Amino acid sequence: MTIASPAPTAMLAPALASLIAGRRRVAVFTVVGLAFACIVLTLVAIGQGAIAIAPGRVAEILMARLSGDTTLLEGRDVLVVLNIRLPRVLLGLLVGAALAVSGALMQGLFRNPLADPGLVGVSAGAGLAAAATIVLGDRFLTGMAMKLPFAVLPFGAFCGGLASTLALYLIATRQGRTSVASMLLAGVALGALAGALTGLLAYISDDRQLRDLTFWSLGSLGGASWTKLAAVAPIVLPLLLAMPFLARGLNGLMLGEAEAYHLGIPVQRIKAMAIVLVALAVGASVASAGLIGFVGIVVPHLIRLAIGPDHRLLLPLSALGGAILLVAADIVARLIVAPSELPIGIVTAAIGAPFFLWLLLRRSSALDV
Image 1 (cartoon, rainbow, N blue to C red):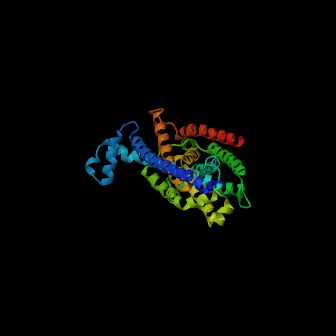
Image 2: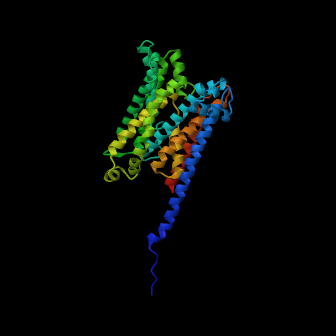
Image 3: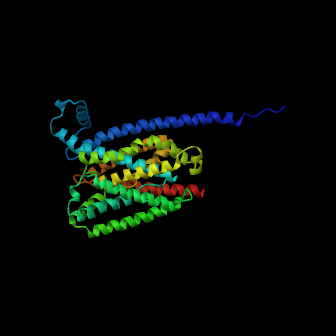
């Protein structure tokens, strides 16, 4: 008499349930840890500077401002926190979240973890348009450009980011399929072309324009203000608000465009929405904080390693991680050469470039095996 072996499904069920439970625990710990780190870093960042303010005092000022208690809103500390450092930190949180989510969206759209607004030329296109706004706008409008509202610069950067994103997608897509190799090569070419044209603009600029271009191209949150934050927030927030609506479509695209279409996912609508939102957010981020690289590739990849590729968690956690990374980089930029300030783009490049090389080596080793 032969003994029937257990059904394969019955054998796999406990292992699958254990794997799902483990993923859920990791996701919960990741959410709690990132939220806690974001709150702590925000308080620390607001307290750092020429006038040191303890995190407890910062929290006291912020709570008094939220509750409307005017008795605690007096003194030098209050002016420093509310008028100088709070808009700077909020801009850092917003830009970091925008860059990280943009990177996650591009990686989902192109189905490749190496995609990033900076690496594939989107940031370079936005930077070129912003540079043209600074130099040519100032020249042809006879000095009136600098008197226009700050929204002019994000609008120009948005147009540049949108143009480079559309060009990249058209070059890399043939017969409804996106070639990763073509995407990366086209991104390198577009970035080089945008860099050359930006250099030309720097060459024809005057001393004041050149100083503005140099300071802006290295990346900094030093020019943050409530006015700038109010101009950038309405441009970036649509990207963050659209995350739940894009997550299901990006999960479907992981299977392939044809498979996602047969699952009932509006593929072309998802693509168009992702492209426009990425161009919008990257353009506003570049215009407000300059060229800040590698946030969009480092953060989504680390989150993906921790909780998996599900975009329902990946996108919001990338927003938290990007905000944390940029605020932490801003703290380092302010402290490492104090009382001067190191451009924040240098700090993120110093962190992101070795990580990107490690990622390339890791993928090459996996392909060799």
